[in-house]
Structure formats: C-alpha cells, structure tokens
Amino acid sequence: MFSIYLSIVKHKDHFTFAISILLSSFLLLNNDNPRMSILRGKSAEIVAFLSSPFTWVQSLVFLEKENQLLREKNLLLSLKIESMLNLDNKNKELLEMLDFKKETELTIKPAKVVNKGIQPNLLSVIINSGSLDGIKNNQAVLTPKGVIGKTINTSDKATIIQLISDSNFRISVRILPSGATGILRFLNGETAQIREVQKNIPISIGDKVVTSGFSDIYHPGLPVGTVAGVYAERGSFQKIVNVSLPNDLSSFQYVFVIIDKINEVD
Image 1 (cartoon, helix red, strand yellow):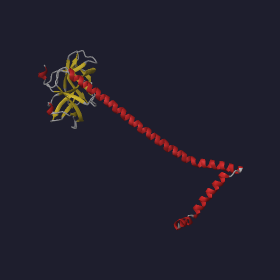
Image 2 (cartoon, rainbow, N blue to C red):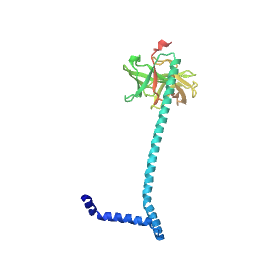
Image 3 (tube, rainbow, N blue to C red):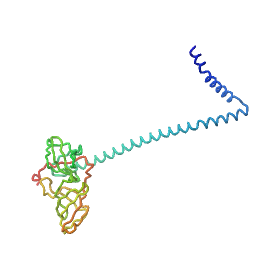
Image 4 (spheres, helix red, strand yellow):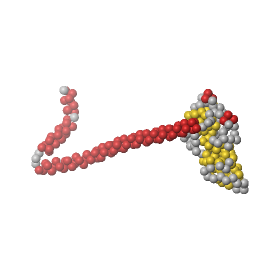
C-alpha cells in the first residue's frame, strides 16, 4: 500500500489530469443544457477528425493484408494449374511411348532423361539406363516423333546421349517422296540443314525427312523431320534444304534406345 501511495504522490499531476478529464466527460455527457449539447456535438466532431488518420491507417493495413492473401491464393492457383499441365503433358508423352512400342518391330529400350549433359561443347542428356540394360555406345535414340540422337558414353546404369542439335552431330537422311539424300546437321544449335542436294530434284515444303539407312547406327526410314524451306545455292547445281524437327529438344522426358543391330532387323 505504501508503494502505491508513493507512486500516486510521484505522479500526482498525471492522476489529477486523468481524474479531471473523466469528471469533465461525465458532466459533459450528462448535462441537458442546450449549450452543452452543442459542445458535445463539437467535441464529437473533433474526436472524429482526430481519429480519422488512425482509421485510414487501419484501412490501409487491412487492404494490404487482403492483397497479400489474394497474391498467395493466385500463386497457389498458378502452381496447381502448372502442375496439372505438366502432368497432362507427361501422360500424353507416356501414351505416345506406349503406342510406339506396340507398333514398332524394333527391339527398343525405354529410358527416362534424368539430367542434362555437363560436358562443354556438347549438347547432351543423361538417361537412367546403361550397359546392364543392353545399351551400348553408338545406338540410335528416338522418341515416337523422331530421332533425337545417339548413345556415346555408357556406364552400368546411365548413358550420355549426344543430341541431334549438337553442332558436331551428323546423320544421313532421305527426303520423301523424291528420294534425295544428304547429310543433316545443325547450324548454331538452331537450324537443321541438308546441303549438297541436287538442284534438279523436286523438293517441297512439308516433305518428310527420314534416315537413309546408309549407316551402321540408324535403321532406314526412322522419322527425322519435315522440309521447312528450300534454297538454291548461288553459282552451284545444288540447293540447301532446311528441316523442322518434330521434337522439342528442351522438354522431352522419355526416350527409346534401339537395341537391334542393323542386320538383325531385315
């Protein structure tokens, strides 16, 4: 009690001011004098004016919380949609793989792409199958849409695939229905071209491009792409053929490795 008394004495000015405010408020609110009614109205206006900045700040805080909640919901919704689309694409790819395996007469080994290649100056991917699965170096690799590369380095449980888009990759192809042949290669990792095609051979945009069979790696007739453009070389009896590839080389997840040797299929 003595400590309370000392505290009151020490802060007597504050207590006196607080008690005065309380008594004044009581008298102001309970007095029926018309002048006091006017005073109460003005007091209410002053209180409302003084409290308006705090109300505005509270509204801003509330709106910021609402906006943050909406941003979080939109992010979750976007992630769900992206996940559903990825799952749908994966299912389509697997169904195409299953259909291709049922229809082909080749002996093929399915594999999953587990990583991108890490070797400099080589466009490649790594699959989760190796020599224990019957995979060897220099075997053709494709998807149901077409050739994507070949095996170049095999271990027991993994294999490096050199992609068709690598600048050092070469593949012998045939253009249908004309039957014209040539070597396909990529320029700057963007454009696939067949050079040294005879100028007098009729070739049209949309013609199919398949493997020629002039190889110990690729069986004849494997899809490679379609003709996207034909250009005459100046001062030459040859022309250049640009080829559009069916595979998106940045997004495929599954591949087939052809296990058959060329002479085992015929």
